[in-house]
Image 1 (cartoon, rainbow, N blue to C red):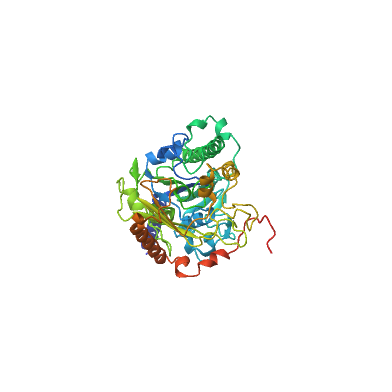
Image 2 (image 1 turned 90 degrees about the horizontal axis):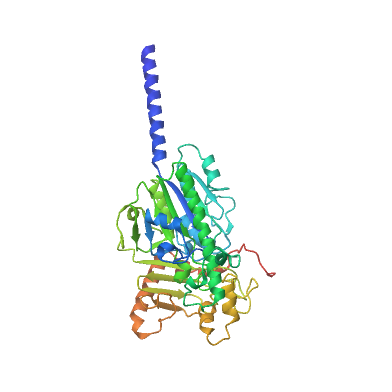
Length: 479
């Protein structure tokens, strides 16, 4: 009898140890996730996309060893709503106050980071993750660490990890002529045609490039650390930006220079390398991608679609035929209007050939009021910069007026741009008879998709975005 009991106990212990061993293997088999996101880094400012001035060897290496996306867009070209949309996998207009800049994180919207933590991942973040705003200590992007090195030191052995690697580059302000002093040359800069060509603007662009390169270098150092620790093979690495560059007609706009971002993904263990994919994707697709890779279901309310099958497919070009458009939008960025705290709500649909934008409040100033704002300064939705000052200071010059209007002027309810003829989206063709059918089709498609996604601007109640609390510093006393 004693011998039988001994055998039973031994068998039980053996089974328990086997189960724990298999659990440990399952834990270690699940991929790690390194999500590297820049602050205000937009398309096409990488050497991988053909920019001949800025050098981004880390981004280029991720693309070469994985997948380069040529049509990646954010939900909103504004920090807080863009990051909230990434975390939840939902369009920002579904996130209540989370659809605005400098807001409270909304109740009832779990994030992929929280879901991974509950599933046994070690989760953390570095520098700018959620925000700006307040998540009231909920660590919606994971606990803050001083860097990847500290995070890895505190990580339990064999536990899969998810790390948000954020920086403040290339957010303004910049050190004047830092790019020029680094060796980049003014004559090499390609100034977008919606700006005047001036030495001031070229210098400003080089200073932006300088910070893009610093971000690229920091991500490279993080990857070197993972390789040194033997973690790179089974780590999904994603490198992108939260929206376009902090220049007029960029950040806080739905044109490509505001809503389109670099995106490269690699995973040595599972993603075939050296591929370029032209499918229209959104950064809202990242949350369901991470969760599926970890063997988890998408979060409730997810509007993004996992990229995992596309990443593993080995295909190039247009991989999934139904990914032929993307939606973007904007609610309140800063308190840029003069007499009220509202924003400039707009939504857009982008296809291969066209960009259609609907402005719900065309009487409001999309870059901010020219005479001042609820928060003090003029044109508040454009970051203070030498480029902004140059355009505004020279607006009375007849040769400069067009650039001022493109960056600062009012816009009609409907904007339509023919990407085939106008890749920089300068000439609004919404009123031309030859584009009437295209206008009707894209506007109908946009509103159908917005209704499907339960956008308050279409279903009713959208004006609530104007009244949500703004947590940014006020430059004037608001009564």
